[in-house]
Length: 369
Ligand SMILES: *Cc1c(COP(=O)(O)O)cnc(C)c1O
Image (cartoon, rainbow, N blue to C red):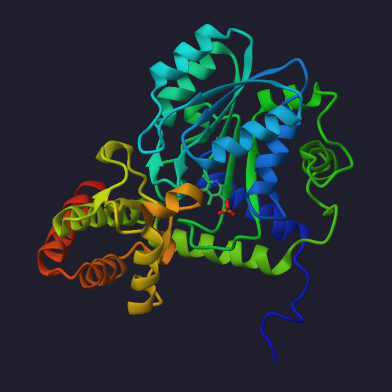
């Protein structure tokens, strides 16, 4: 007998209720569409819905996802202005304002909030303000920021906000969601190239589900993934979103302090203000390949949330994915202990530094009481 089989069907009302819970998490009153696939699905859907020949997009590249978005935008025939910055920092609102000023035709901006792959995070509130003043639509990839740091979709003026459940939410990877502002719906409806009768179509969902009163699902819901998403929303509600965010902030602060105290390694993102709460990336010195270090750490403790960086970064960057349940003092301490063993150094100082940093971050970020 399996508890995962033979379940009663997920109703349209259940599906709509989960969408409303996601909207609350995103602090938005806009339409939220839960999409039946990993987060790349709504990211591609949002870009293909908004971009078209004749449009000009500003694609902000602060990590590998920005490169993917640029390729989709070009595929759609849009003119693309890439604003690329080094992957170990953040883009500033000033840089975005200068790009908008240099290219007045820009009508769409794609931005990644936090990058789990490189460990940096961008100041979305300030960037969104200059994008709004220019009159462009803003798409935000918030997959690695949701539940790890504040995400104020409506207050900031984010038109298309994309999330997935698998990072700080500690949930499933097989469902995701996008919020769509009224401005974004107007632009998408006016785009003759926006997908229709397609799995990538946001307009199909609007027509057949949202505008139809959310009473009949257009096709069978991904039952198990939806139940898992609901369960992870329950868990976030039980802990309280501010406490979940504070745990991620504390995990990043503690990991950074511990790594600095160990010596040999340095945070890949040097400035604390640019470091993502979702994951900490660590630079290995020349002669110590991050792939070999990750393999040794996993040999010491297969439960550690570590992996080498992707692509060319595999040589010099180790990722510590302290998100979801791994945003805990125990995981951070276990990671530092294994790092000390792998480097042949004492763990004591690093563990004390991490504990002090955790406590300081928790006190300044955690909700009272
Ligand atoms: C993790 C992540 C995604 C989801 O992509 P995967 O490759 O499936 O992990 C999308 N965007 C960002 C910024 C992410 O960190």
